[in-house]
Structure formats: structure tokens, C-alpha cells
Length: 125
Image (cartoon, rainbow, N blue to C red; front, side, top):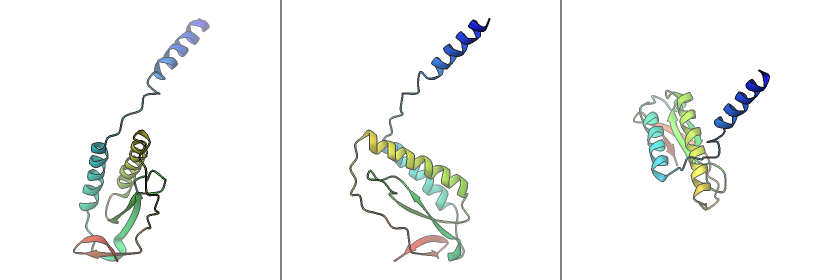
């Protein structure tokens, strides 16, 4: 009986690992759709004052570090935004690796000044 249980455990474990080496191919279209979803979430929430404006790093440069920073109102569902951004960042890192993307390796600085203008948080120069 123990041998049968052990056999079933080994067979079920081996079967569950069968697809572990398969990695999903990420396309530019996938990245564009993910970024559109992020921007829709951000665009759906307005600000009424500058103190509501925040930023979050997103993306993955081939040399490391973020691609840029998203500016958004604190009225957005921040947990959902972070989830979408984390997925996008991981997808972009995988895309870069799969396609041997080369980056300029420049460091993108976070926004220093933001303002709420016409209900939207924007970067000020």
C-alpha cells in the first residue's frame, strides 16, 4: 500500500512539473495592452489638490532600473495599480531577456515636482 501511495505521489509530482520549463513568450503587443490597462486605471481617478499626487516606478530597462515613473492621484486603487505595475515590470524584464534588448543604461529620476491641474496629476518642470 505504501508503495502505491509513493508511486502516485511521484507520478503526480512529475506530471505537475511537466510544463514548468515552458516560459510564455512576451510580445510588444502584450506590453502595450498591459500599459494601456495601467493608464486607464490612472486616468479614471481625478485629483482635487496637489497633495493627492503620487508616483510609482514602472517597467524594466535592460540594464536594470525602472523605465520611468507613473504619476497618479491617490484616489486610484493603489493595490490594483501596484499589481498591474508589478506584472508589467516582470513582463518587460522577460521581454528584454527573450529578445536580447539593449538599453541606454541611463538612470531615470523620479519626478521632483507634481501638480494637480484640471483634475489630473502631472509632472511639473
